[in-house]
Length: 380
Image 1 (cartoon, rainbow, N blue to C red):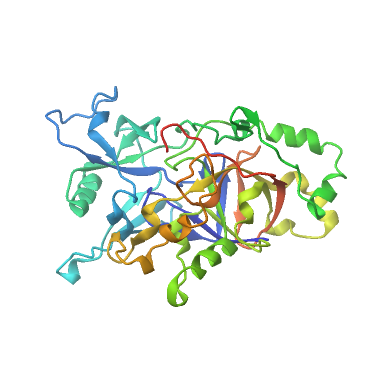
Image 2: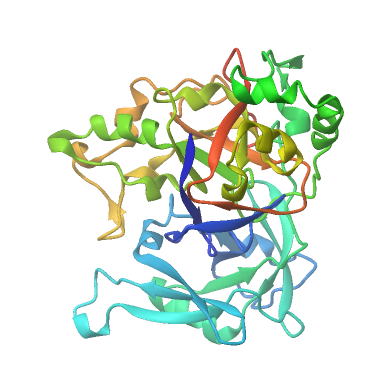
């Protein structure tokens, strides 16, 4: 298999940015989902204290419940001095003056937080502290949506706790019993690891993952999907339609799986960076430099798959909807049996950071005999 596509999403729930290489960290691709929008509900108290007294006024904005977020695109900008910004463009489908749409704003990806206000926020019951971006930025988004909005930023080093059984150290527990797995996959990868005496020790050390937490990603730092599974989704659409991979919001798209939804049973993958995709002997020599990702749980899907990115509304015709078509036979996770599965949540093993590129070779390093069972308290 190979890495076909890479995506990251600086502002949560806006459309993603396709990239050809990415720096992976335990918290996700660098700068992925470090920003998030919150709707400010009316109150007599107009302050946002760091003690969290106004946190109940803030309603998290995700594309599932605010489909107009699908009208915002993000583009990566690099300045001459090496700093990075994102250009956010609002493609206003309701604008009567077409000259006024789209409109854009440029936001620094790593803003100076010294003069920004720190507040308490929470996503899926997982709390963190974040900084409210400058008033003019928040005002721009408020004008786009038509209500008071806060753009908040989670700086490097700040995280949210991972709940439930998503972490690799907890994923092996299903109904308080160890999950069953058959270990390493067959093939050249499992063969060459036998030539490394310290393999089992290094793998065990890798399992002692840094549990600092995640950014504003829903449940895990990475979402891995396959092109073969996407092709199956496309086959369910009428008139030769093709499913839009960006609506599944993956970080890593793989191609070359043996069949659709094979990833349901993957417990981990290894990525060999391009410069080390050489001979058998070279792979053995550089084994310790491979990039390992533990795949701990399934990604359960919601109605965000059925948003029309041209209008910022949900499709009205059954022919255009995807969720209902997946409901027929993809409700395969008994931890959340009413939601269809597409993709696997992942965590980087044992490294502070490493680079991955489109075209890198990928192997399955662990297969589970049974599907995992998702659990995150409050997510039913």
